[in-house]
Image (cartoon, rainbow, N blue to C red):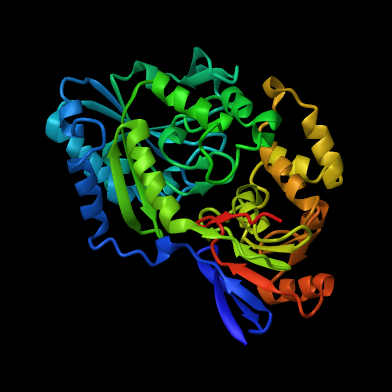
Length: 427
């Protein structure tokens, strides 16, 4: 018998599995990577050696209004480490700059002051000017035309009114944007609901290039880059994290060039050849990414690459905040997976419903795979309405899966499905 820990909420769950059933345990190389220096040292080094730009302190000279865009409460961005360093660097070159920190929420709910204190620390919350993007407040946005896909581009007016934009974020594989980080701070980060919805339309999500690890010809990524360039993002700081959410790499400088270096690092250390399993067990990286069901397609998509044609997927996610979105909850429970997909496929890009991309991706996956959701917080009857099978522990879920696939089924475990880039094997 082997015991495997799977990240869950602020702790972990234990899976017990017979060794003869265990095909493989897949983990990201990021978890074992030793950068040879501390988190702050990595960030400071990146700022000293920017990619494709002058140092930030030089770029900040003469700028009056500086906008610093950061991540919201659903992301594990280590802003307690990065923001003080960025602010110090800006002020070393321009001590009189008017700095606004804008929290990039995308379509998520506003980040509370309590969450800001947890993310940034009391010093920044008490002494810096912080704004929170609200995609549903039309007065916050200005129209900057169309993006290559034809989508409207409505961006937070603070971006247009600033003399300089700096963004911070972290890079990991992303299930339809290819990778997170870089340009995503602007779109979807500080855009209106209309712009985010069009960028995430059924047509865009269904494009074969809109998938994990793919940037070239990815229409979602291409719109994001154009959006970030159009508001003249001057400087980015992006980091890579290990499973404990510690900084193990940092890149700063040009929007695309610095992001590309970070993507190359994350790809090299997180990519692996997927191993086929009759049952695939995964988690969504623990808190904050597993706080609702809306976020979980990230890891389920990784599991899909290892689940063969009809493998069973077990997802361990606390879902302490439930569904995570009113539209998502309504759509994922509106009928069978075929009915959901048929309904969504008829929605034109400019009429895209917020959050519809998650039920779209889940429907695609659940047409081939039964999904068992392990949660101790979410109502099990609601899970059944979402076309999933509920379980209260990984061991209970595994017994259910054995009942479907047989007691001799081979099992692949991906403890943190968000951090792994699994390359699907050809049949």
